[in-house]
Image: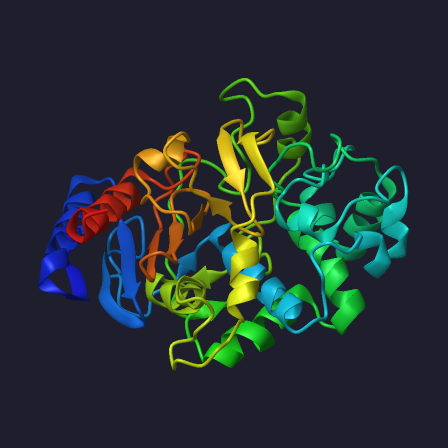
Length: 375
């Protein structure tokens, strides 16, 4: 029998039941879920087990690889550089990284990378896992190749290239690595614990997956040419810095990302980002079939946006003009709702590879929250 611990306001007790049932039915092994509203943590629930054998109980400080939910935190760090005037989303990437202009990429702007519309979602040539981990090699390959599709015309999720592309921009403008930027500008500034980079050896849960979690499911369904070229190469494993994954839990994610939902205010009520910078998130950069994920998506600056009822994810996400979100490989999720100052986060260790965005437990929790809020 798995138990769910932590606290939640009485009106949100349904979430505890959802998590409890998911763990006891075998849909989940270990989970955490958090809800921040207006700077107040109203739900911080966690439970189940850290390991496949169910011998180690999931505790308040258990962390787990969150895969691409890490991109949401990295996007916040990039927005901090924009807010500080160091970067401009409309500036050509080659202004920061001159070599990048080669092979038809001279018109690609920073906003194209942040919104996954740059045409640079993958490496054209086959590479080995150790090569995907080589920052200098990846920078050289990306700088030298042509886009996989005309930049700015469509999105194609930058699964494994995003961190290398942004990492070059960050290192050339600040002298920091991408991981160093996140540590300095986000984690230290917001005083957040339990968000860790590669090599973390502390309190972490085991990833439970039937096969290699670092390989995307190529061959399980038909892929278009861009998706095939993007997904054929291995992604970094869950020890990769910040954008391929980090270790965290729902409470820490909700604390960090509530800065978006509260129009730039941090947990202490200090203006961390200007409201005008937050507004940039919600400027639409693409809408339509994502060429890599092969599902309809609407991209803002660094985050996916809800679509007003005509996109698949709108079936379970809240309505509103200023709602952004993203998920991690296997089922984790973050939702930032500026209309209601609501931030949701969900993490787990059992990988569900059947859905491209948030597992069923996460979706049920989101709907339970908004059923209470009447949205």
